[in-house]
Image (cartoon, rainbow, N blue to C red; front, side, top):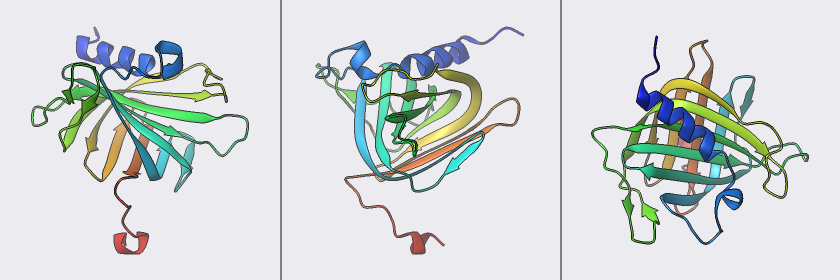
Length: 181
């Protein structure tokens, strides 16, 4: 069965999104991106589940209108690696508008931002920001929802694998854990 073009595009973008920003272009250029610090996050992926881990940042990338990826950059519990990224990539839903990008390429999301997930990728990086492992990418199905307060992504693979990531932005305090019960 031939792979549809949007799925292939999403898979390629998910893999490309794993290349650290330092390796792709100078730090000051932020073309097609929006980044925000995370204060609290939880991630579950095949073979691992970590709650309330040390968070890094969330980055949205929109290199083509309608094609979106969200990267959760986390600080793993191991001292061996500096960061761990989990990327969800896919197609913007018809109910959401693309990010509003200025002439310098910096973008601002129009909340809520919702997109269907077509691919997942992950990777580990050393302290210099270089890949410490080969990136892993998989086709997946799911959804991401980015709001002014938090970002939530869920997806599953053909073999029953499940990925979930949720993070709260630094600019808005996360809700009290007791209030969520």
